[in-house]
Length: 101
Image (cartoon, rainbow, N blue to C red):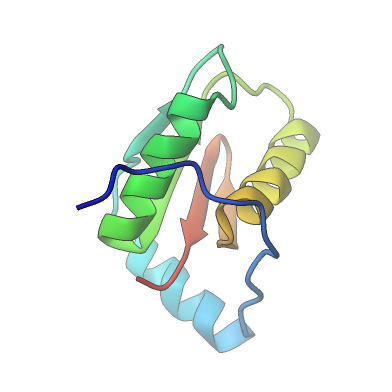
């Protein structure tokens, strides 16, 4: 298996409302699999998110190092574009991302 590389930045996926509702229901039972600390969005963090998206498709990310809702919204937009994923929802400091496996 080739080594995991950082993904190329692409377009964020767009979900229909029905898909978003279904994914929110699925995400309810999940625990965060990636924890973002004070270091912010590093290459190592992006690799871990890439690994989690490949393995699970639907993940929760705890953005503990990001204090304001506006900053978390910008972070979510950046992550979805960088990982070619879709933003499902944000609850406090938890971001839910999806990318089909």
